[in-house]
Image (tube, rainbow over all chains, first blue to last red):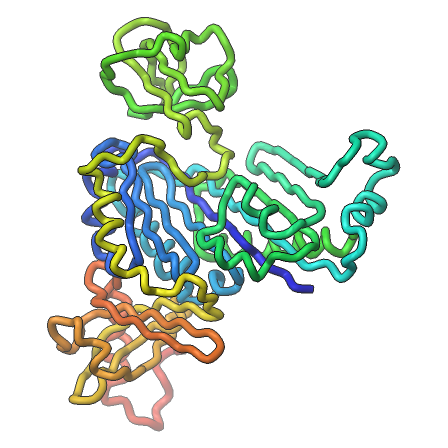
Length: 231
Length: 214
């Protein structure tokens, strides 16, 4: 099974830091030399946002007055190992933000990811999925139907989950999603047909660490494998 | 001051400011549910209780401008393009992007199979090599001494013992790349503060039992 994660995103949301734009430059300035490029959004407003681009390495950091985001693509293991960009950069910067006197507390964290795998059977892909899933013929409901998916959702006081899975039709199936990969050129490697899972997990939590992140990745991988097994 | 408000089960937030022209077609009066796909201009006062704005009255002192991304729920994933404002000539992003255009020669289609960012400290340097302490495992605080060609450190002002460095190591089939940067402001010098442990071993006879577990 050719399993791939063409894009994932991890976010920590915290209490708004009202004077973030006044303190962020000193905090982030040392890191600029490590980046390929930077972008500053909403400059000189309370919502000033920094984009640290590591395009050639396949990831991007977004740091703002209420959240820190890492978006990446490729092998998830690259980001869960010791000294990975998530540990050495993302959580290093977050640690510095969380030590500031202006910092309140973490409100929630979010993991979003798309997993795909190439199908062993390259025959009628859609018909295989619908035939195993539905008790009716989708063509009789919607003439010319060319895609389908199943959505699983759950909500509780501390957790919100959304899992969408179905047939995967190649790289354009990724590009039409909410989150776009950092380097679409790399999608040539995943331009095949198979199965796809779009996964979003929001946790209300006040402590977030690198170990939390690793667990989230593990849950994401396990969920994909569980779904794949039943197909 | 918390800048968020909760109304009609939608959390919306925005910047308090005094904007000049208001498009009345977009004025939100509280009479309808918030549509997250619509740009709103809200006019009204707000009350703050426990960090959240709890009650709204239209047409009063302040103007709350709701931008597109602000109307999104806390569960929504952050998407690209937080701002759709046109880039002005003085906008730093356009300036900085232009500066970095010179680096476009870097191939963008590389898929690295290993990517490490290592905190390190210089312990010595000679004509050929720079010797460093590298934190190879942050969780268990495992150190390794590694040496690198001196020319990799040519961007350092000095190679004095104790100077901090960030070493990026990337690998893929047939390629290994090392990038070295001064680590001041990034690397925490306290990571290498292990002198207390070493003092316990000073003058200790090799045949003596260790004073504690290591």
